[in-house]
Image 1 (cartoon, rainbow, N blue to C red):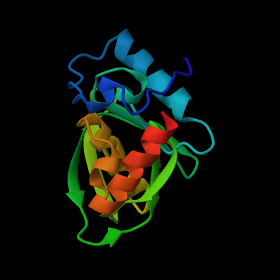
Image 2 (tube, rainbow, N blue to C red):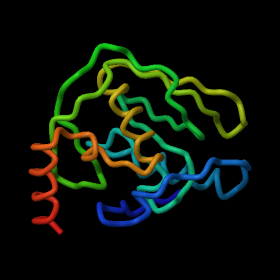
Image 3 (spheres, rainbow, N blue to C red):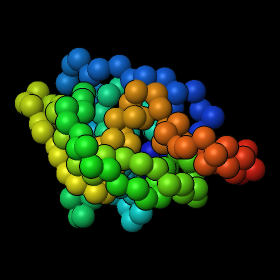
Length: 161
């Protein structure tokens, strides 16, 4: 296992949709180990594979002392109820902006044995699931910001680069 460097905004890998995992081999198992080790630190809720430079559909999470991962995740359900709150991202370091997300989310994917996995949650877990699937689709949370807030976010990002 290895702690991997986080790619930051401006890196093209973050804007490239990830490819599905088609074979569970040593490379994919190593990727999952790296995702779990890299997310397992205070202040880290989730980590998508492209955030460590790998263009495969996989992410890990570290929510409420639960560490986990999912391969080929797809959001299958979102609540109609929403939550508002500040959201941040390891790839957009030290910046937090109000981001509207569904209060509840359910993701379906697979594990390293190829078995179906269902991951669901409310509040922070729901936010994490939506945020990480966005990454795998080539999006950053700043894409979801209201126009005026996004303008402020882009200005702040330019100042930090």
